[in-house]
Image (cartoon, rainbow, N blue to C red; front, side, top):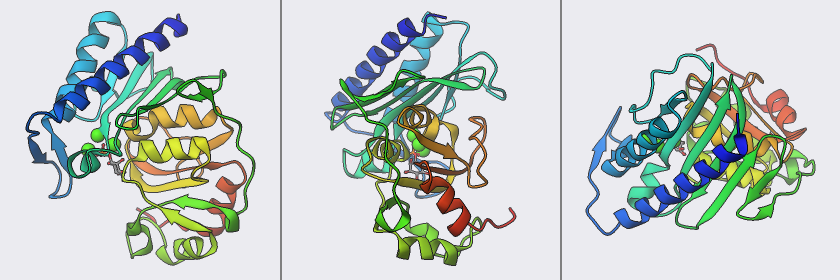
Length: 265
Ligand code: IPD
Ligand code: CA
Ligand code: CA
Ligand code: CA
């Protein structure tokens, strides 16, 4: 497999998709709801996913595609080469703010993350990594992250954690919120992972994410020495939804050991 060629191809596809998204703001965006009133999708999410899929199918017919909007393949195993795509991560930001959303793509071979991309479209910041070759923001190589203690860390987490919920003991997580230096919430898992990669966030936690939210980011953060797992400490499986944490080494284990009490679901 010529991963260098696939890397160049994916980068140019993502840039072209980013251009299409920017142009879409000139027209009227159609908004619909999915699972509930706050689960939004637009015609642009769908069009961008279809754009990727038509190109990938034409140029890499042996590869499979797992995409959020369902135009890809019915992927139930990690076998072969799988492109895991979120055409717009942060759709609510896309609609309400017209910024703070990203294209997220991870390319996996037999379950191993080979290439990862997060394109913050409006900031024009392109985060990318090729397994074993380091991670980059545009042309700048990202340094390996230094360890940090909980009391010096900034944690990406959203407010639903500190209310009673069916996934985790919210009081234990409330102690993390109290013990860390501060918390932030950006509304795009991919952008939050880009922040972990650059050290702007020391950790990012979520009670429920899908493979397309984390596929690109997981490849990128690994290259700077950070770790991503579910909240049981297991590798994310890239097939089904699960809990999620990404953090610098050391901090990752400290959070799991001291602050995460999972409920049986
Ligand atoms: C969502 C965003 C959000 C996260 C949600 C995701 P979408 O993705 O990443 O930050 O909290 O769980 O579903 O639907 O905007 O692609
Ligand atoms: Ca969505
Ligand atoms: Ca998403
Ligand atoms: Ca999405």
